[in-house]
Length: 247
Image (cartoon, rainbow, N blue to C red):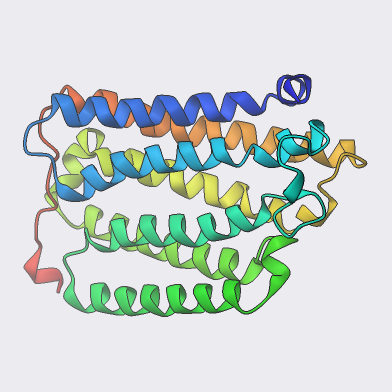
């Protein structure tokens, strides 16, 4: 197992996730009166790291020949796809809500909140109504979720552009978070379409999948870490300046 992790550099993604989680905690420690949404984000990164770490149980069991966890062999939980299906729903919902919360335009905010609510209901229904979540990534959740997140971030950018905060965007932590999320969700979900080919018998796909995921994670959590560390020196997170004339 260790040789497989080293060969495919799986540990690199986990290291960057850990660095991002530590950077978030550092930001909370260094910055007084942190916005509540940012506190949730910093804590959420620890959840992401621990979840991905626990997801290694599938690799452990396979290379251990199911000696440690014999009950997993030939069970629905033999692969960790189910874990990531639920995580896709939770993560996309969290990040979408994070940026929806930043919006000042009441109408847009209500529409996107309603869309997020429907997405969560749809996701729960999809994941609980079929055993397919154990075998392949749910593309409905991924496609709809990514579209919702992109719209939420685009709306955030629009309000950023029409406010005075655009003059100081480099000091805005959420700007760095949004860039990382946008690039990651444009690169990674498409490769999940072919997740059924992920097996030890298909080494070429494993290498491609691992490479795309690795560099996407480096960019995502690298942006998170940079944003936390850089903005921790500023002491205060800028707030969106309301532009009433634009409503």
